[in-house]
Length: 385
Image (tube, rainbow, N blue to C red; front, side, top):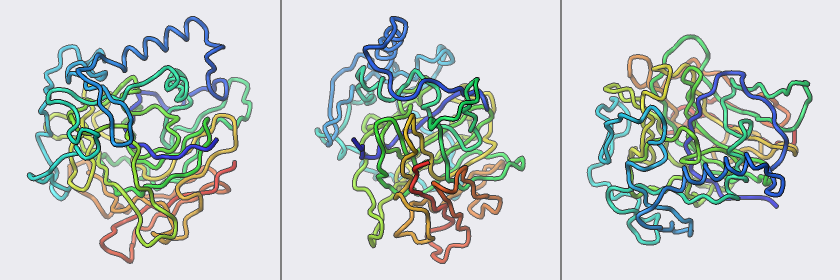
């Protein structure tokens, strides 16, 4: 069975480079769960499915619990014991040259059946079942997203498996430049994936041994949103993290569909904010205390795929790029916030990277013939490796 329907997701994991190890391929079957694993799953369910003021549904029928702001999963982290965060938090500082939020913004109520979202003082947390946890393999490390620099997956016997990640990205060169954020307009595609796979289009910021990712994923077989152990602090009562995004782009059509993303560090206090949409609405933040380093070393834009036990899935539209926006998956208008908190759209230190050109490819177009599209990363591939 193939799975479709991209999800918007954000992701943060605290792992050191090269410390990934292989695990058994495929899904964990309920009948084979050990008592210890079953207890882990129950604990995870309690962590995610906090008591809710009410249950509401998105326009696609997806259930969310309206959880008290101070009881959302992000506050379970040990570093949050003495926090001073509050429901109406917004960045204290905005970089010059980035999108500004409009004062007449109407919000995201249109994404909900009730036309509003959750009550003031609560945030929507997607309801998770036991099958969901088994499906995304939250208890295993190898299924979780990574950057193209974090590619070690060999097991202790150096056995070669299909259980690996593949990448086609444009990325900043490792030349010692500090980054305090990045942005993009990301094409929304729906690559074909099977139940033990995911295919993502995303922005990745490496922050020492930690990283933040944001973007779309088909298949949902990855740790994202409040499913993660180290989650983002949600500040919106009307945005459903994890909602299926529609419509998707069609290869060769005159018009493609895309969404705008930004991850920006607040110069005033060091918190990393997620921005979404044409008006750069702030959805939430990762506290500065979560990171062992205060700046990003590397940034990349493009595709990541994973397959547990089958040949790898499609990326983007399922075709390698041909340098045409109507035929290529893309991240356009890319930019970074540099070490001096200035917006850099020139980005003359980007390199193209794919770990397997037989399955995937990437083209960094830094001299766009369409000035309004800015610099672009075009990516995609058939997979099957």
